[in-house]
Length: 482
Image 1 (cartoon, helix red, strand yellow):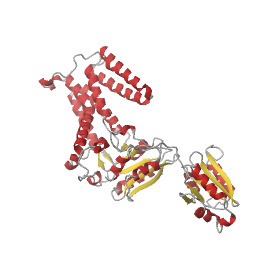
Image 2: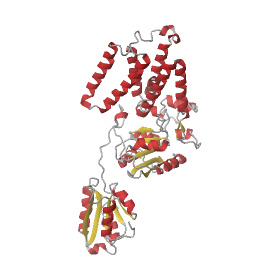
Image 3: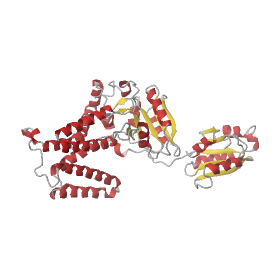
């Protein structure tokens, strides 16, 4: 389209060619005449506030020619549009982008520029507590699928003008809005610039699975099962990380946001710990750590001791099954692991009224019948149940899945190679984590590199008025971002 084009009919024709006007039923063009001036409104039906739009039409309908003097465009924009969010756009391509984001484009005959009226209304649900991050005591609001609402939930908690919300559009066809949130005097400027560059280099048709696809484009480590960014749906968690110098990425249409950088230990933190006294919070944290370690090493260790009873002291010779069953123990663990994952997926996809029935079927068929017919040893079911509880106690769902893969690999190496397999598998797991970097942060910090004061803060939930050492200060730039 010629940017100097002023004819009303030519602009309307251009919309028909580029915006699907007349082809898509939700692309609407309302043509009217106010004070003798042909006026058109291009908008998406279903993404506009009817009341706000009606107020605008009511005000414009009573105008006379004298009201529009000396210049029609200036008079309409500055005096007669009763709406807060109104701006001028000269670039027709940007006009299309705004229209398909829900903004209304207003054109006036013989006027070159477009008047953009932000009276959009997205289909949205009310903020509610996230299912995967529930707490006994605390706020009950959570992020939703609307970007502006999510930003407002954070603004409500941090009323600092230095909290910057920077909007970026990514993907060629979906034109998804992504918001960078950071506090300007706390953020790592070099990391911020790296994120800006990587967002600008996202060349794909669309990112409908917004948060996960963003991480994959930013990190580019497809074989790494461990999350390099922390996912959360809680605005209070986001606010706490922003105050520590982190960067938050919000993608429109996704209720889950990314916190960058994020270490292994930060994936194990939960807001519940900070809703109790420091002593109770420390206890909950230690119990959670024990559950996570059990979810990784309990089943391989038990299999190692059962296959090598000479490793056990006399007081612990009771460990081991009295009857192995018809299937080798290693295969029992593998089948049980797969069965647990199948039950988890079935629980997700099962309608709520049938969830109880699904649990009863799993308990009767797997927990009772499988033992009686000799498919599984009772102790295998016991330890798999403890491991499953430890996995579900992991606050980060993504970290729990990654630990499950690591446990299965260590279990297979232990069952095949014995003590050597357990040692090699555990060592490789630790070395791989130690070599990972969540952008500028070592993934196992403060264990590697060792930082004793920060490690103490990881283990103990210190009082709110105690000085804390944040991730940004602990990791000077070294130019080795993932």
